Image 1 (tube, rainbow, N blue to C red):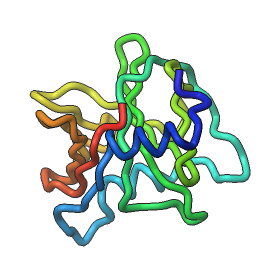
Image 2 (image 1 turned 135 degrees about the vertical axis):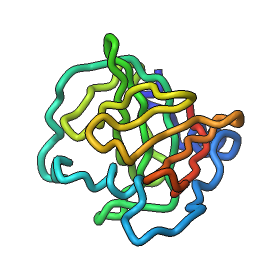
Image 3 (image 1 turned 90 degrees about the vertical axis):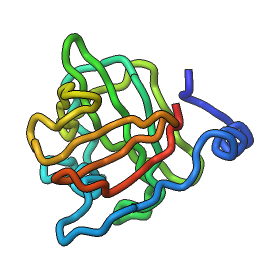
Length: 153
C-alpha cells in the first residue's frame, strides 16, 4: 500500500501527518529511542536484517530527534504477528519512507506486551510505550518520558 509513494505525496503526507518528535526529558542513560535504534542485536547497514517472520502493521511513528550514524532518519513500526506484538526501528533517507502492510519482523525487533493502558518491552522491562489520545507514541525509560513522536500511520 505505501511501497512507492511519490516525493510530492510524501511531502504532502508529512505536512499533514507528522510533526516534530521531541525529547521531553533528559536522563543519564540513553533514551529508549536510542536503545531501540542502536540495539546490540541491530544488524549493520552492510547486511540486510535477518527476518524472523512477517506480521501486520499496526502503526508507524517518525522520530525526528535521532538519526543513524549514516544520517538516515528513524521511524518506529508496531507489528503484530499472531498473539505477539513487536516494535522495531526502520530507517529511511529524506522523504523516502516505505511502509509495508505486512512488514518483516527483524531480529532487532523488541517484543512488547500489553500492560495496563500501554506496552512494556519483554526483553527490557524498564522500557515502556503508550499511545496518547492524539495518537502520539510516548517512549518511557524507567517510567520517565524520554520521547514523544507523532503518528504517521
